[in-house]
Length: 151
Image (cartoon, rainbow, N blue to C red; front, side, top):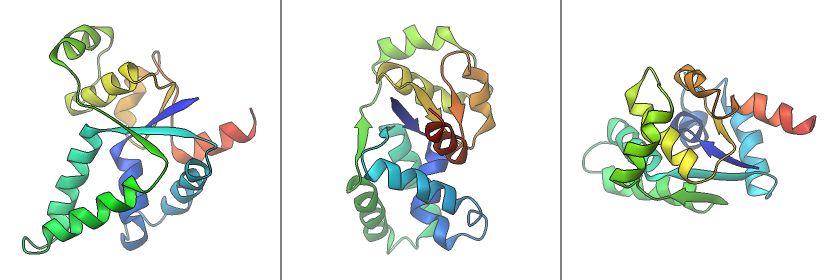
């Protein structure tokens, strides 16, 4: 089963150990990434996730350190067993956006990327993805790991 990792899950893995706000989620995300790294979970992100990670880096780093910081963060992600899905074509966006409605339009490319790349579920903390539960199971990292233990 292939899963799509939303930016908020990836960012907890990359920044959560240092973030007071994300420290509570970090152990669950670490457990998920251990299963990804071990080949138990087939995970993918899209270039939309990479773009959002870049924006997070830009918020966290001084302008003089940004390039180095981005490189380090992307290297940390790219060394993992995670697929990276390309940008969507205009045609893919037009065809697939008709299949669903989501409250936060910035999440639309993530849903379409998950559809086009053949993902079976979305792992996220973002409740906006509840709007597409008719297309995918949508779970938090803790829910996904617990679900996989029982199947």
